[in-house]
Structure formats: C-alpha cells, structure tokens
Amino acid sequence: MIDLALLLLTAAGFACLCASVARHQPALFGRALPKRRARILKRAGWSMLALATMLACINFGSGYGLVEALGFASLGALAAMALLSRATRQNARR
Amino acid sequence: MAWLHTWVGLVLGWLLYAIFVTGTSAYYQEEITQWMTPEIGSAAVASDKSFAAAADWVQHKAPDAQEWSIFLAGKRAPGLQLYWTNGPDAPADAPTEARLDRQGREVKARETQGGYFLYRFHYDLHYINWYWARWLVGIAAMAMLVAILSGIITHKKIITDYFMLRLGKGQRSWLDVHNASSVLFLPFVLMMTYTGLVSLATHYMPWGIAANYADTEKFYAAAFPYPSPPEKTGAAKLAPIGPMVAAAERNWGMAAGGVRVLNPGDRSAQVIVSSGVDGNMSARPRSLTFDGATGRLVSAHDPSGAATATEGVMIGLHAGRYAQPILRGLYFLSGIAGCVMIASGLILWTVKRRPRLADPDKPHFGFQLVEKLNIGAIVGLPLGIAIYFLANRLLPVGLAGRGDWEIDSLFLAWLAAFIWAAVRPSPRAWAETTAVTVLLFAAVPIVSALTTGRNLFHSIAAGEWIFAGFDLAMLALAAGFWTAHRRIVRRARGAAEGRRPQRNTAPA
View (cartoon, rainbow over the protein chains, first blue to last red):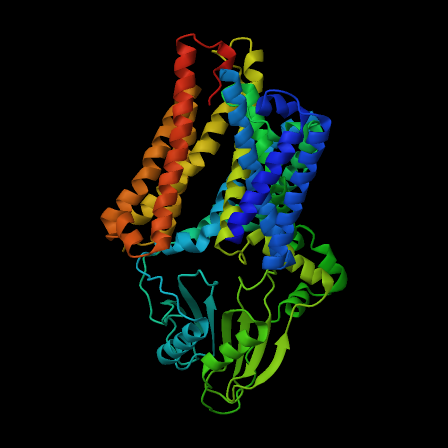
C-alpha cells in the first residue's frame, strides 16, 4: 500500500516538474504555460517528492526509507518520461 | 570531457556490461540457486528450529567432530550449508560438508554453482586468477566513475533534457535512451560503482592495514574474530542450540545467519551465533558467544568504530541483502537500467560514427571490431546465461564435474556468439543472435517443465512463487529480446528497400 503511494507520488511529482519546464509544455499542452502556473507546478512537484521521501522514512526508518524513496523516484521519473514521450508522439501525429 | 567519456566508456564498457548483467542477477542469487536445485523444497522454517535440526544432524553424522559451522544465507536461502572438521580417528576421506534443507534433512541436489556463480563472476570473473580479476574489475569500476562524472559534465542540459525520449529517430533516440537510463537511475549507478570499489578497498589499497598492523592476519583477527578451539577439559553434553539462537535473535532483533561450535561434547565447548546477512543494512555481522556446556552467554562482538560502520553500510547498500521484496525489485530494475545504459553507450559509439564512414558498406577495421565486439558482448552474455539455465536442466544429474560443465556451457555459448558476430555481416548478426536469445529464454520454462515436472501453471497453483517467478522472468527476458529483434529487423528491411536514408540503418 505504502509502495503504491510512493510510486504514485513520485510519478505525479516528476510529471509536475516535467510540465513546469517551458521546453516540454508545447508537447503536453499545445502551448506555453504562464510563468505563474509553471512555478506552481514546480513547487507542487518538489513537494510531492519531499512528501514521498518523508512517508518512506516514517514508514521504514530513515536509512531504508531513503533508499526506497530514491528507488521509487527513479521509477516515477521513468513513468513521467513515458508520459511525455507519448504526448509528444500524439502531438506529432496531429 | 566528451573525449574522455567516449573512450574510457568504450574501452571498459564491454567488461562493465558483463559486471552489471551478472551483478544484477545477484539480487536474485538465492532464488536462482533455488530454481537450479529443484530437489530442495522451499518451505520456510523459523531459523532457530533450522539451526537446532542441523545441529542434531551433524552430531549424529560426525559425533567426533572438533568443530562445525552451519550457515543460513538469509531468509531467502533454500537451505543450510554445513562444514565440519573430523576428529583424529576419522578416516581421511570422511565427508566434511553437507547441504541440508530448512528442516535439517540432508539434500542430494544436482551439483551446480547456481546463482552463486553469476554473483561471483561479477567481481572474480572466471578462468583467470581471482587476484588479477579483482584488479581488472577495480580498474573497470574506476573507469565507470570517470565515465559517469565526465558524462554528467558533457551532458550540459541535464535538467531540461531530463524527460526526453524520442523513439525511432536513429542516433537521437540512442542518445535519449543512454541519457534517460543514466540520468534517471544516476543515484543507483553512482552508488553501486562507488560502493563496489569500497567493498574491495582493502584489495586495492592494502597499505592502510600494512601501516597499522605488523601482520595482516592480526588486522583480520581483530576485525573479524575467528577463534580456534580451546584446550579440551573433559566430556560434557552440548546444551541445546535452539534456545541460544533464539536468545541471540531476541538480543539483536534480527535473524541469525550462522552458528559455529568449537569442541562440541566437551566442557570447553563454545557456541558462536552470528547475525544473518539480511537482518539490517550493514554487511558486518554481530556475534554472541555462549558456553556450549551450560548455554550461558559469555561475550558479545559488535563491529565498532565509525569507519567500520560506514564500510559495513556501504557494502550492505551495494549487495542489497537487507532489501525486502519491493526494494529488491527496485534494485533489480535499476540494475537493468544500468545494463541498458552501458549497452546503449556502446552502440551509440558505432551509430555516431556510421554516417562519417567513407563507405558504410565496408567500414574500416576499428569500426568493424567495435561493432562485432558489441554484438558478442551485449547479446552474447544473455544468450550464454540462457544456456547456463538450460544446461542445468539438460545435463545428466550424475555427470562428474557437472557444476563446471554448466559454467563451461555458458562460456562456450558466449564464445559462439562472438564467432558468429565475426563471420556474419553485422546487421544480420544482430538479428540472428537476438532471435536465438529469444528462443533460448523462451525454452527455459518449457525444458524445465519437461525435465522436472514443475511447470509454470503448477507452480502458480501450488504457490511456489520462486519457481513461477523465475519462469515468468525468463518469458519477460524473451519478450524483451523479441522487441529488440523486431526493431532490428524492421530497420534492416527499411534500409534494404531504401525507404530510409542509409545513416539511419543503425542496428536497433
């Protein structure tokens, strides 16, 4: 259960970070986002990653939790990347 | 910096790939061994009961033994390993070791090195002296550190490119795959390379010990105490082992991993219980010594000092023995990402240089050499591992030196892949070796079902998850190589029909 939460949090966190980068916005939204919204996305992304790390440390203890949080961070980033890659390809087709 | 990254990565990349592939398999070392010794049941028994049963067995089998050791390689280990020293009256050819299952019954399993061989290969290699092998592996690991750090510097837009993966775009895609696998899994790859070096640090830099201890043995005696049997003082029955193990486990709050008994059956008997390898993050065990005749606790040994603790945790982090199933899975996936990173880097070397060739149909020798070595190393090793598993099921159970034959089959198959790559045109060799690898991995569960009577559906129904998981992993590997094979074939066909420009005909 906690593992699923960690995966979702890190994936969502990295998706937000990805969406906050100006270069990726056309592929995801078809246009650039206003600076303010990008900043909110960035903060939300980092907060989710911090929350995931905290949850993991509370649940497993700080050493084990940190390792597990890093592991899930890699997996979550991979998921976010797959999402962006898909969006880019769909936009290219349109 | 780009120059450094390219050439250091190329020269040691093939060895690093082999280290990463076999090292990654080592996260499931016990499971692989379990699969390769299907005679041993996988019932879980509390460790104190296992040790007590094994102690009964050895006392019955070798009553005059001067000392014996029982090892249980963690909760996931399929069985216990026993070693003992016979008394002076025993015949010279009396056995001195045995394998028991977790209920303390001797098992006659087929002779195999199992997952241990793959684990061992990742730092000791094979067919060459381990001492030089470790130096070679150490140089490769240093090169890896250099490649990682120079790679980070070379890859300037590390943050903005972070999520880029453009597939089907030739060189660009290879670069994206290489970047994604290394950047996304950077914490893992960096940690593994560094801690790998630390675990063999005393091999590479013995001078720290030499400067502080006149005799190297004295350092090891202080760091890893291993007492000899004391003088005998007269017969006395050995107290039951089970309660001592249980007491030690309560004391540490984790499972025991080994029991060593000195002078069993004597008043001077000592029982040394050490903690298991998977109890906590540190790889350095703790131990408690009990009086063998009375069962009273005599002394405790804990690794002490900040440096020892740091080293223990670093080695522990590298080996991941402490990891629970989910974290173990993350370790394994990260390991695969590391393999992909190295393989894509090696392939990128050729992809980048192909357009610059004077005649792409007749590349110069250096280019050909790299491409052939890439095929032999990247596809050949997984192919050899599939053969290793098949040999485990197909070689006669009674064959003398069977364990070595299994290993030889791996290297023969790997060698065959190199030869195949050398004699065939490279694009064909990519397609053919990957096709053979698909067939071999897909054959593993089928051959296993035919030769052992354990098939995938039966394993799932019976809840034997190690066997089911292994078969499924083989099918997943077959599927992975099938995807690679399809891409290679599509590329080659596209090139042949002239639908794509020549420079995109890189092996997938």
